[in-house]
Image (cartoon, helix red, strand yellow):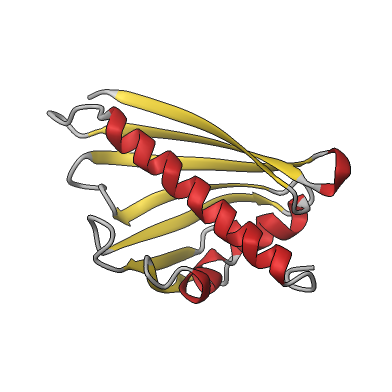
Length: 160
């Protein structure tokens, strides 16, 4: 079984605390409002949103799979950092055995932030590491962050 990883950095003009809350912690609630063409619905289905909680995001036919379930493994509200594991849906069971993403929003000069994402995964036997899939994943994460950023810029009192 092959393992792999990818990294991504995204700059934003929005403060780290607000973008962290909107784009990561509350994405299951915000996404259906601002990206309904992709995310049809989302909810925390186990726990209360803290470490160990599982949320489900349900997608439109725009994506090649109908849903994902993600477990929050670690969160540091002061450092705007979290780690989550894909536990069901997506490519789990078809291409991937495991997939984990670590998000860290670092405050930047001028009030914005830089998001650093590291995703690691283990492929199922016989599955090939597809660079096209990696590019799609990076584009999806970038799209999520930029959609949340646009929402926060348009709603300066949201997620304070």
